[in-house]
Image (cartoon, rainbow, N blue to C red):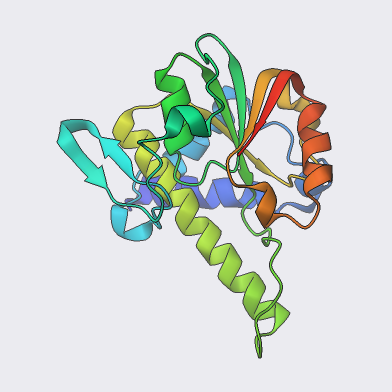
Length: 209
């Protein structure tokens, strides 16, 4: 990571550390300036800094192997909808395969992912403290976030991304035609609350896989 990327990363992360920003629900991220800052903050990410949740096809015949390969059944996975021209809000993009695919099909995609420093809904394992669980989930989320930006950069995607609390979406998220939950609800302690939040921004359909 070069100096400019490191400086942008610090500015990006400071947004989520700010108590006032957190109280507001992390609003303001869809501003083009913030989207540019987020991209600059991750511009130097290498594949070694990533955890590849999804397998991705990259330009030049390159393939990034991930824990889950959804390529063969992606039409079924996404509900067999015609996504061309739709505004899509994708919850839990992970490495981004589903969002990049919907974008390639002609959708305008906005991804929503857990904010830096927020912990995932995980119960500490046997003999593990809550503090250690928090630290490990924050680190893991960061590596997943890196993999999304790495894929976005290599594919030259234009997807926008917002980070926050899925149980309290930023009020300025705007409207979408379709929301997607790709194997996300099983990770949440309050799945119906997450669906309620999505429904408040969705006009046509919610796809749950």
